[in-house]
Each structure stands twice: as C-alpha cells, then as structure tokens.
Image (cartoon, rainbow, N blue to C red; front, side, top):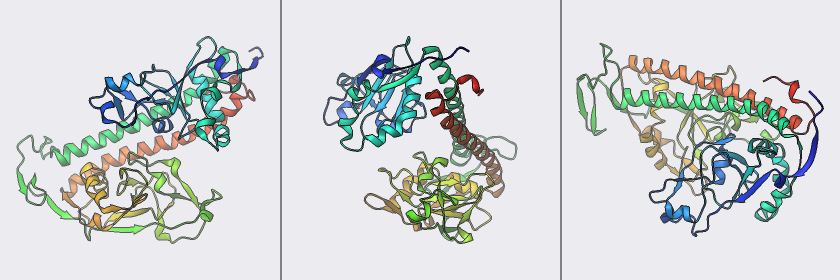
Length: 429
C-alpha cells in the first residue's frame, strides 16, 4: 500500500451541521406527545447508545413534529448540553431537541461513522475543556471550526471498517443477550403466570384442562397442589460493605459490585464495577450464581430498587457494596433462580418500590421483601426451569466478557488509527 496522505481541515469541510429543534415550551407539554408516532431522541439516549441509537421512549405527534424536524437514518447525533460530546448514529428517522446537533457527511469527503470515531477519540478532551458555561462552549460554531487531521476517503473507510467490525460484534452480543432475556421472561410467563407448564404428558397444563383452584390471597386461580407463602423467614438477607473514596480511588483491589453495576433495565452491567482496597469479612464475598438486589436507587422513577441480578459466572470472587444485599433461599422448596425470575416481574417491582423512600436517593426497607407473597410450584418444576435459566445466564455472561475484551481492543486501537500512529494493514480483526 502506498503512503497515506493526511491533511488538516475543519469539520465543516466534511459535512453539514444542523441543530436540533424543539421550539415549543414547555418541552414536556402533553399536547406534543398524545398519540405520537414520530420518534424523539434525547441526550440520555445518545449517551446510552452503543454506536447506533436503536430505541427511544418518546414520540411526537403531528403538532410536535411541526415545532421540530425529522432527521434521516444515518445522521450522527452530537450532544451539546447535559451529556457533552456524546455521539451516536440514528438507526431510523428521529427528531431531536436543540441540545443535540446533527451531522450529515459529504459522502465524497467523509462518513458519519468516521466522524463518530473522531469524536470518540477526542471526547474526553472536549469534555474537559467544556467546564464553564457548557451550552456556550459547545455549539455549531464550535463544532464547525474544529480542526481535524484526516486521511483520504478510501483510508478513512478502512479505519471505519476495522473499528466498526468490533462494534458490530459487540452489538450482536448485546442483541443475543436481549433475546435470551426475552426468552427467559416468556418462559416464566408461560409456565408460572399462564400456568401452561408441561404436564405429566408433556402438554400445556392449564390449556389441556389441568385442575385450577382459587386462592383468596392472590385473588386468582393457581394449579392444584401449588402453595402460596410470604417470603418472611424464607430468605437470608445480608447487606454489603460500606466504603469511602479512599477505598476505591486507586482502581485496585477486589472487584466490587455496586449500584452502578445495575443498568436501567435491571440487568448486570460489567462497566459499573469498582475495585475495593480494604478489609472485609468473608461473608461479603460473592461468586457466580449468587443473587444480589438493589437497596438504593438514584433513578427518578425507582427503576431498579429491589431488583435482583445474578453475579457473573466467571470464576472470580467479588465483594458487594452497602447499596446491595445478598439474598438466598433458606428453604429447599423455593429454588434460587425461580426466586430470581419472580423478583424480576413487574408485579413484584410495582410492589417493592412502595417500600422505598427518600428525596434524591431512594432507600429500600428490606422488610418489604418479607411481606411479598409468591406462588410455590412443585420443586421439580422449579428445578427444570432453573436449568434453562442457568443456561441462558451463562451464555449472557460469556457474551458480556467477550464484549469487555472487544471494547478494550477497540479503545486500544482507536487513538493509534485516528492519529496515524499505526496503519490499517497492520491489523486483522
């Protein structure tokens, strides 16, 4: 390959910037959203995305669209307020507010993907410099005048091919994990809500005429022979360790699962780990398959309080913070993984968040778990379900670990490729 030529240019030479639109005030006016069908992406959605924005929570109606604009799929979103310099690409047409700037590349000079990776390369530098009046410091004029060292278009595409191949594998693993979670939820609903678990002939129990009996506490029918009990005296509950900034400042020590290890969807998040450097009791050690629940919550809508996660199956010991509690069944007729799935239901979540209190930080009264009533299927059925859930969980953990390795590889390659320190042909992904 011939020597690659790099030149310094402004971002405005590579494409067009356009600021988001949200003229109407107040921005949360219900008239903008009632019966909405036009997707609206916010700065938090951009920050949470992994390369592509694939979901959104809000939708404008026709009235909302009139005071905004629908940007095409492929538009690069750059946040200029709240979460500064976060970037992601629209996977379908969406609206966005004026706290986001859209970038559409001139296809002869660059691509949205290359500019995305450029921002990933310099994001920390931008965030560090934007320490005063952020809204004034990061705007279209600021972005347009940014100077960037770029190679010719063909070589840009080769850089993108290397980096995006890693990100696409991460996205695929995330998609597989979402499908595994959906399968687990569907199976739970089918067996323990609709009661169509396999009967002795392998047929769906309730649909095949299995006998049902009314239970006054649950106010619904359950299969004959099933029990119903409150969890009081059925569980062991142990809070985690308290820590100070000194215990975690050096990023060395024992990996500690904490509140940041649970994402908004109530799943384990490996990037939230902290490392605890201090003394702790052996009772505060957890390992693969143990259950932890969130005892505090920083989200506005109590999204994670009381929610369980499974400690990763990675042959590593962890400690857990005071924000969490370890729970386990003390009785042999409540399977740990059946319990885990029950505590992930919306019915339980709507119940347990009423036991949390606080203004900015919600704190869970653990006693709430004790008074939650669950139906108790035969042990054999719980064990059969548990085997399937364990299989799903281990596959999910394997994908999470692979994504950690891929992310480290991408982050190692990114600066060297973007500054020309190494050449694309030096790597095979």
